[in-house]
Image (tube, rainbow over all chains, first blue to last red; front, top):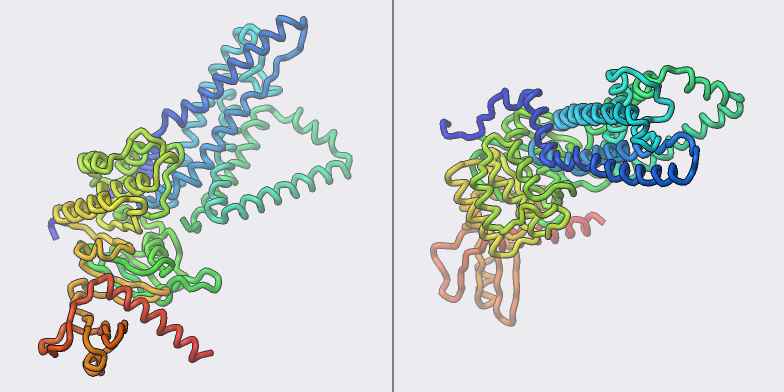
Length: 248
Length: 295
């Protein structure tokens, strides 16, 4: 039939094109996606500056101004990718996308988005160090025991944990899609048992000093980017295996 | 050519059988009505056809291929589910923009026109939409995507009668210009009876009717008259339903309106909705009798 409109060219459904489509469709609200976390981080940042300015004004030497506020970015990125699996995926599948293409597209988007965050964080860290902690001696963008290192290593040090966080939450979202609340509770319970077992073993073997030494002696890039990325890779593959057979 | 084919598909959830050895085929470029009660298995059938769900046994095919993770055929489908929610962070325009990116034949002009006709607020966040507005997004995506195979699973929830009529009118007009295969699952059979060309009726996971709508319209007749005359006429016909009021009897019989008519009897064609309701009721009471006999 010559009037048929269902002639989708095979190139349209080739993997790179479909993955690109997924990235584009997930970017429809990119202003919120990228802007949102930074807006919140900026708000936290301003509050932090004000507080540390007030402390410096009243206390002679309050010590290093560590804040830990950066964890907010991790939590926002994590929750965003959780929602991608629980809310965006059913919509995308209804539009005729496959699970594989959706998951691949979202993974690429995650890698790109977190890389962007890492680059901006590195730039902010540079400014923070140049200005002596924004003039009030606060460590907003510096994670604990983060050494001075070249920009590439620094980007990796931010990127590794962010990417890992994103994949872990993608995997959690996949578990929720497949098994619902029960799946999430099972994971939480399993995690509790594993951590409990580790704490028990370390205490029983009096191995806490060795445990502490591991963190001090492992090079920081390996500790913050290397090991987390192994976990991230496991979560990425696991998430795919879970979503492959999920009902939607 | 069949765009959809189910071969002996069975789906069980634990000890509940949602689909029981279901087989049917749907032709290309027609509007098919997938009818049946709540929980009859309509949604499950559509989910299996789009690989959102998995059959326990049997084979489902679209465009002659199995659909699971098959981008070549899935890319030609659009499945507007009654229960479809849009991401909380999305505004209406985000949902439409996302759909526009996915479908190569998306008609933005048509989408814009429908947004206006349904008075849909483009910048409202999806979680603040009324049920009807959520349905309107689905209807717009389903129509403007021009997917060669479009499933509408009760897409009208919360839409008022005027909005539903807009949907039916636009579907029919656009279908005429851009033929494609539409599967419309609905309870409002009277409203769509002029629209659908072919009917599949599912009840309790089984196919009861799989026929062209035109053939079905002549498939049953209701006969009214004095009880004894009606009884005499009804003998030898398959009876779908009976209502008695005093000495008068009305029976719904399977078969066409007869050429030679008894003057004391009144013959009326049975609407598609009536036929579906009577056939389903008969199936329910029939199977109940079976169970009683068995126990």
